[in-house]
Length: 140
Image (tube, rainbow, N blue to C red):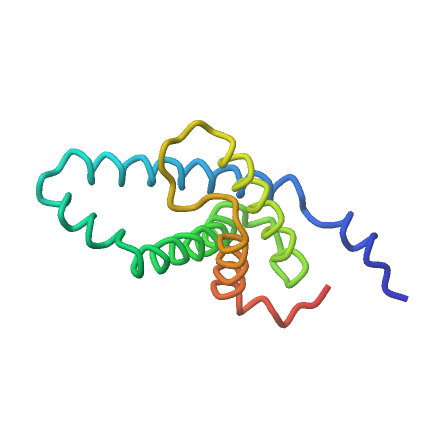
């Protein structure tokens, strides 16, 4: 009989939490770089007003959340090669990335493309499973 609690406990939590921590640090650094470029450049200021207007802002925030998931899987593939990615470990990675976003939302950062919200959780799930679609065939 399949025991889901045993499967949950057997996930590679330490390497996946390292991946989530590195992903969160990279997201914070990229967001701060984006803020700096958009506020310091006279060329990009009108473009940023257009890009972050109401209809396009929703697309940008969702694309950034999907990018967090994609970045997490990419880092896990390249940096944590001892982790055997499969469907259950992708779900564990989603959980670690969500905890990373929750911790990031507690930081005193004035602006962020990716915060902790239901939209960003859905975007992270889409990004992880879009980038990790080749690992879906492994169920356990």
